[in-house]
Length: 298
Ligand SMILES: CC(C)NC(=O)[C@H]1CCC[C@H]1Nc1nc(Nc2ccc(C(=O)N(C)C3CCN(C)CC3)cc2)ncc1C(F)(F)F
Image 1: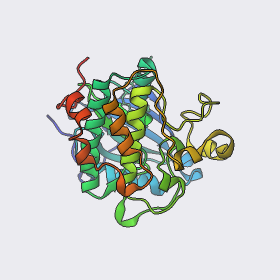
Image 2: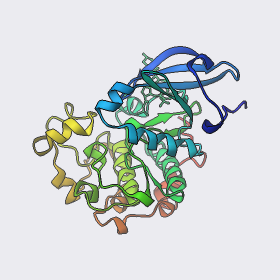
Image 3: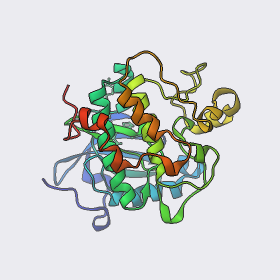
Image 4: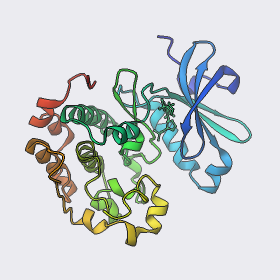
């Protein structure tokens, strides 16, 4: 296919694109469907306002996101083809995920079948093995950061909180739902933080709610960025339930003990004891339920 040339080789401008319908709002601006005129390649154009980036002091995070995501090439990682900017805005040229946002699909279905959940978890594990192999930790794996490609395959997007492990960060990041104990206690953390978050995600795929969610207010604080949750931290969010890992499985919906076994091996406080990702791919629940293509066929 006429691949969109890599970021470093080309100076992009807005004139290179026909802008289509808005796809929705991201954290710092709108996302539009767009077509690159020369190649007719369909992309998503994420428009970020410099003023908002400055007042939130996330420029360095954006630079890191662009640097990291533009060098990753994996079927389950959303491509970042390039970027450009003008007086007021920064534009990210991103892969268009035709089937949209996973969290909306999860809200619509309430929860996924074991086959669908296992297929998604296996493809995310393969993407994370690839990232960790390049010393990249995502650190913010959650439904809101996952998109669905044209064939139904999952795409990890939004590397805004990812880091290259050589310069490990101790900053608080991501919404609390998915933070593993060592990050809640903000001690040194490594790639195993992504294993914890994948365990939380697997639980949420199967039950429709994350394992350590506060029962009360669960709709209000849900899906709001860390900042407001952080402010309500000691009222809204039971971080003690994360640090003590009091993992409970509701009676409904009925979930196989094999799935519970896998989740219990990932949501382990001691990060060195969490099931390694390559072992996850050999777990009976994954082997028996995940579609090897990473594509969930209804
Ligand atoms: C990971 C990150 C945190 N999330 C985001 O950036 C979000 C913020 C807004 C959109 C999305 N960003 C992207 N979205 C797509 N595809 C897409 C999205 C939505 C729909 C959809 O359901 N509608 C248009 C529906 C159609 C029906 N009507 C009724 C509602 C909207 C269909 C396709 N591809 C690439 C991106 C990307 F990431 F490259 F920008």
